[in-house]
Image (tube, rainbow, N blue to C red; front, side):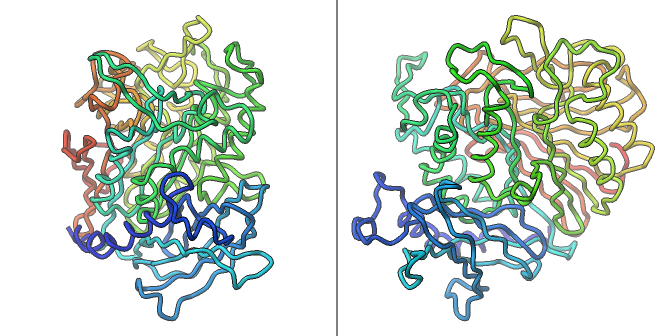
Length: 524
């Protein structure tokens, strides 16, 4: 493996980033009194980077008051002869968050950065700098690529538990020295209040850190913003953000469970019943709290391609914004489907243009797993598969069109990664087992949750011929993180052979399943 050895970056960063995390604890969790009283802007929620390419990256920060964002970069932690980037003015209109794009960076290099927040009326008055680092994508195949993925954070009422040390899974992921983290959705549970305590089946008590915004379902913009801030109270997550860039997508719980455009809620917890209104507020908060390259542009969107050098393109899907209404999925014509026509055509075009060896399709929902939506008492379907193993119907028609396109265009190296179902598994799709056969074999890997309830494995739908090669899931619903069943996946692309290896891991890093795929094949 030609990838950089694992210990190098950890050894260099351990001391400085731990110190940085300690300096930037939000008020009430250990902020330095002298700094809190200085009247200078503070970045108490840490820093994060996102959508990093071979020559660019986005840096995010949140201030505690109006401030000018300034970023300095350097090839070393000493910050000798730093390069300075002047960012936006942070104010109440963005909840004091801001993102600065760094351009013209050297490829395949470790970039050290620090964010300073300056008083808008006196630029000489700056708060304590907050430091971070990331690695730009390499233009050399021999450097390889390593990344991790998962989803589902603080779901089903299982929040930051100080007795368990908080979100420790982020330390485990960071120890693998990934080039980036792909979050497959449900970054927050805006529909899931967090209470101080939850009784566990064995008689123990789960304790949560709580906030006012997490005491009810999110409806106002302030409440949605508070859901994103909640997770940043965890020091493991802040330290992870400071050293591992992210590629973020969203799913339903950023708004409310199983939502679709045009839905009117029957849930008695909500005074605002119009999901489109809730989604607009959630989307604004989502765009404020994550560095996403496409969201702040006019007509901003979540779906995008992140190109990570010659070995990898990541196609980030949005299976929420453009979907039709959830239904039993038995219709024989469904042009809108789960992606919408425009996004489907975009995806086909970008896949055909890609010259990367591997084309990871980051799907916020699984393909062949039956995910029901019985919230209104009807046998509706939330994802793609609708339980009928015969010819494609409903949203399956759109996926069949895409799979047929991949086959006939002879697009090689497609791999599907997803989360959503709160367990980990590997499915192999094979036309010889399928009702629809006009596609080449492919793999779908599932991982998660990061910190949420775990659930039993979903049923498979035979339309595309899935075989469950591996699964680890509990036998009962909503198992707490105190009992385990928290998962993430690792993808390692070898710089010499270009082979792609997927490892499904538990919270402590234990490898549960490994699969290595060979490059250059349409299907395998």
